[in-house]
Structure formats: C-alpha cells, structure tokens
Image 1 (tube, rainbow, N blue to C red):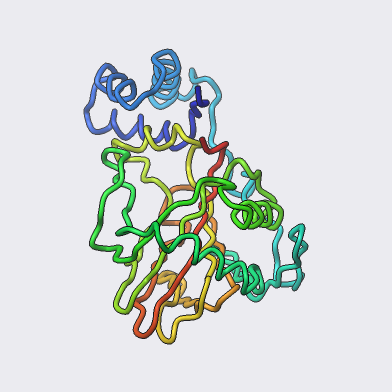
Image 2 (cartoon, one colour; image 1 turned 45 degrees about the horizontal axis):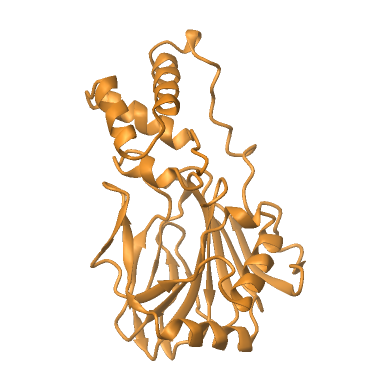
Length: 286
C-alpha cells in the first residue's frame, strides 16, 4: 500500500472547499472517494479546519517558508560552470533565481538521445494532460504533441539518465516520475501552463496520493529542430533554445503563480522536436 502524504497543498484544498461552503462531511466523502484512508482524511480535515477557524487552538502546523523548504537543484549556480552528475560532468549555461530556471549543457550524449528516440518511437500516442478536476488524464487542445511514458528504469538508458538527474539535482531518485518522451511535429506546441497541481481543484487530493506535489521539472532536448520549438517562460521574458543534449530545469516551491513558473513549448516551425521530460515530487512517487 502506498504512503498517503498530508501535504500543505491538501490542507489548502480542504480550506478552499470549506470556504466554498462545503460541509466537513461532504469534504470527507470526497477525500474517501478519491482513495484516501478514512482515518488519515479525518485527521487532516479536523486539524486543518481547527487551525483555520482558530489558529491559537490548532496543532501547530505551519507550511515551511520557501527559503527553508528542501528543493531540487537549490545549490546550482552559474558561478560553478561544471557540476558532477555521477557518470558525467554537466555544464551550467545559465541560472536564474526568480523564476528558478537553470539551463544545462551536455546533459545527454548524442547516442543517448538517439536511443531514447528509437525506444519511444513505436509507443507514441496523442499527448494528454492531467485533468485536475478528476485526477485522470485527458487530451487537451493546448497540447498538440505525441508522447509516451517509460517506467522508472525500464531500460538501461532510462536508469542511467534518472540516476544522473538525481545526482545533478540532489534529489532522491525515488521522488521522480518516469521519463516522458514527446515529439512535436511542425505546428505542434504546448501553450503556457504550470506543472504543479492546483490545490483548489477537486481531483488534486487523488493526484497527491502518489508522492505529493510536483516541485520541479526538467526538459531534456533529444534533437535540435530546424526552426522553432523554444521553451518559453512568459513571466520572465525568457526563451530557451532546444539544442540536442541540453536541458532546461525549473522549480516551484509552492503551487502558486507567484513562482513565475508559467512555461510552454513554442510551435515547431520546421522539422521535429523530441524531448524527454521528468517531474520531481516532494515525496516518493509510487
């Protein structure tokens, strides 16, 4: 049985449901319907609402300040142009603090990029997004790529890259989702969006059972398209060129637009773009 995490985001969701006028009984039933253990759900509900209504009598719960919360890649700086990542040294090409964005060079070899593309090619289907109202996945017009997921360590090249990323970002290997491979044909794009799960959506408690909230993303470029396909960060006015072997990493210390982690994949205008995407969770992903 997987561990169920009572996260700050779950507590925020409980408060938002109460503010919307839902009774504790209705909220409890919604959590149980999403798969939450009844005793865990009741405890989370009672302690969260007690503190929300009267902080002086609460259980002392407080969300860690952003500066104190452990985060992937926190120590990486452009002042250190090379970072040891186990089997490979990776270049730091650019680093920003807000939004937290790091561009890496030489993260993957050409052979690794080609192998991942070859392994994924036969398993591609229309990409889906997480439907946070229900916790399921759905086809979304905002995302017009094709994609597939590898299981963790499904192939040797996957295991090698996952271990490299865990070492590079100083984040537990088990806290990472499986690699997702995406292909963008000419005209395909992914409109600006956030990768975290919205605490106010009713499906979020179901999603958070598998490792808690997402806290970081890394997009690894497996080829260099002929034109277009940049990763864009509208709030920062930043565009990252898709160059084979490079990657862009970004983190978000809370599920809120204040992180300025809004990002998207600009349309490919010539050729194809292939990427390997990995998301990091705050806890063990199961």
